[in-house]
Length: 116
Image (cartoon, rainbow, N blue to C red):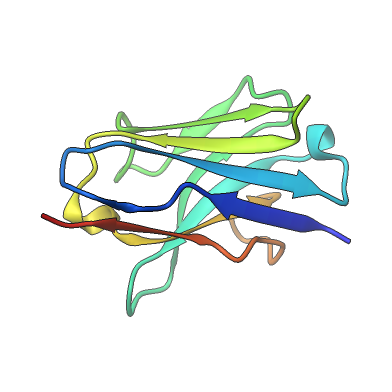
């Protein structure tokens, strides 16, 4: 059974930083593209970032490029999202996804709230 467990969400002030983690199990993590998506209150899912199996290629949504960094540790079966210069509009539930952002296989999410 695939399990994806996100953690690291918190309440943070604008301009602050957070690091999200996603612990994966039940599949060959090192053999899977992984993604982060997010959902703001009252809005649909928005893809945030994608990373390839080896962690050597990454892609970012324009809204987060230059501020967020996706990475992975295949030895620990863990996906990360380093978020800096957080903005009010980054407030959302963040989900890690096995595969591309459109994949239905995702965790239960971790809440990030950016507020002063």
